[in-house]
Amino acid sequence: MTSSLPVTDALTDAEIRGIRADFPILQTEVNGHPLVYLDSGATAQRPLAVLDVEREFLTTLNSAVHRGAHTLAAEATEVFEDARSTLAGFIGADDDELVWTSNATEAINLVAYAFSNASAGRGGAAAERFRLGEGDEIVTTEMEHHANLIPWQELAARTGATLRVIPLDDDGALRLDEAAHLITERTKIVAITHVSNVLGVINPVEQVIARAHEVGALVLLDACQSAPHLPIDVKQLEVDFAVLSGHKMLGPTGIGALYGRRELLEAMPPFLTGGSMITTVTTTEAEYLPPPQRFEAGTQRVSQAVALAAAIRYLDGVGMPRIAAHEAHLGARLVDGLTAIDGVRVLGASIELSRVGLASFDIPGIHSHDVGQFLDDRGIAVRVGHHCAQPLHRRLGVTASTRASTYLYSTDDEIDAFLDGVAATIDFFGVRS
Image (cartoon, rainbow, N blue to C red; front, side, top):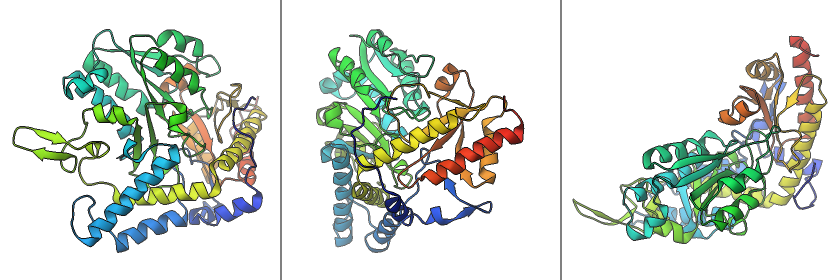
């Protein structure tokens, strides 16, 4: 398996034990067994540092931001904007290029609806570059999470544009040769995932980005499964938009973010409208604030943003390169261990790309829900189903799979317990070939 990740020291056993001590939930038992939490790809656990920061904010500074003139509101606003700076710096963006959203799904919809509004004539001349109509094309891939597929389906339906999909090969890897043909002068935007939430592979997005920019198309990167696990720099990647979700990176639910290049955000018409995103309002029209506030209508997710900033500081304290090295080790152990079990098919196992600590598998003859329930009886938490990626599963000839996903707090012993559990599942159901 080839690797494009920088060589760096992984976390030591002692460091991982210290990290685990910061996560109270990891000390609990489930069904009489120590919890083995291998569902961080869905929702990561939160360290005490994050829980404490949000509680401290709520008990000492809780107030509406950007509104009140009193001391509490001013201090809350400062902390809220500091959180924006923290997250922006984490991904290599400028502060005014980072828009708070409820989650990554909302962030993608924000961009899609901005294109839709521009196509309806909103935004004036500055928004013309986002206008779509018949003859224009949107390109995404066959491996996308539904959140990075359905908004583009709907945008195509509203505007008359055509949606093109980069296919996968039989192993599940992106057909980059097809991408070069599908991305043409008719393409207005390319939406692609950085890391597959099913396969765990780190896609060679640089090639797709370069092709998109060659023909003048914009690029939206789904970084939900990369930002928590890899060092990323949106400026270095040269993406136009990127989205991420706080609850996958040690932060709370209900908070996500959109990165957009400043000149694009300045030209985009807003998606959600109402209070807090305006300068002047009459009964017939409104003028909007510059970004990022232009896209932050209504009361914001203040304590969640503050807690997410604490999560970013925690990740920075450990070191993203070392987290990536730790997960690359765990990902290899997952794939190698599962592949060695007779009767298990690991999705994407033969793809020659670097991966994060995530693997999905199928056991012919056992439904993934039964696999998940059997493992849960042993205290092992995994994800089952289609993982909001039905087209990918359909391409690989399965309806569902079982997914194990790790994070900085996961251990080799947990991988061993998981692999033993999978082998025991096959023995229990009697499907070993």
